[in-house]
Image (cartoon, each protein chain N blue to C red):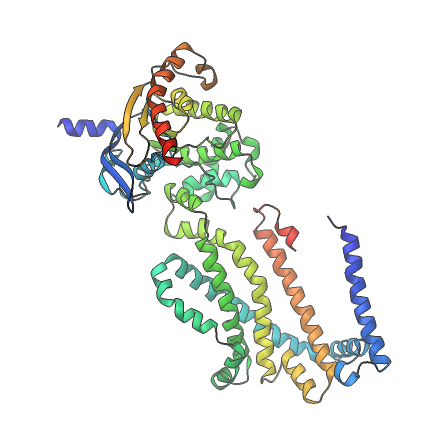
Length: 266
Length: 258
């Protein structure tokens, strides 16, 4: 009975997960839980298998061993109830911004006309009301991310998976996008797994930060609650005493892993 | 960036010099008219053909053969390309057969097609299809295989599968490959039709050229070639217009190419 009640509450539950690529073990023995409505940030050094973990939860990658539940169901194949925001450009280059957003619905069987009607308000919410008829190559990096965000959110996923979505943006654009993300998230508090190698970004956004060890065979080695008040402004919150304290605490753990990761590469 | 007017001027200049030299050579006897004809006579012959009107029948026949070969060959090629690209096991099995079939010089098929289909249009269409099919096939195959994996994964995560993936992701992605192949295909369809006609038929531009050749009428051969050339250029222009319209989502590199 206790088992089921836990499962009902957790948006994501990972147990004893191992993923191997040939003889290389990317992640090993990972246990991870994301609560309903929780914003979880996963940080770790480059190449620690963060994206691997996310892809397994998304159902894009089969686990070598272990169990993965998302929204109470075992994951097998692309998870339609989850939204995934990719690090790279993932928009359809042959569709306008408006149609790209509408595609989120069209792919699920909504007729194009109806989907466009629903996409228009989203265009506005991500601040692109005037850019609906532009093609992706006519948009800036930040604008493309906004379209990508709307494309995912229009499907109203209960779980949002984000793989370093803002890492290619300049700092100002990045802060704008992070604030936009928090603003949209606060409306209905989806469960989020946000992957980043930037610890400041993780703390500024998340309810909880989980640190992964350096690869190969990486796994979570620390979990830190972030008690910063919401709503937050990601640029301002970085300057608070509290933030710096948390940063120091997590960094003392993360630093060792980053150094290990560098040592392996060098 | 070269000045557009200047480029045109040079292009026209080269043509005029070339034709001028040819005409001069033929008139002064430096080029044997029996072998090389004479531009002014070729032009006169073309004018005569069009004023007498018999040429229209042959143009019509060649156009129909070419267009049918083009349309059927492209459709078959695109369908087959999609199928094999999306089912790698099938592709692995059929690969040697496709390579073997494509290695046959098509001219050699003409005698067989004559036996199968006679001297009518069917033979030329069949010959054209064997050429057009492979161009469309290889380009579609390549285009589908080169779909951006992130775009594909994103569409999948958003819920696309089967027909929607094909329509919104695979086909648009392959479209630029297919379109560049269309322009090659048009040329191949014409080759199929004309070679077929030349090697035995009762009508068409290839037939005219073959008839002229039979009586050593070099002027007639050249006139036929010129008509064909203009015909193919006009078709190519049409395709490039359609292409520009359908691929307007692309960054403007298409314009630099044409």
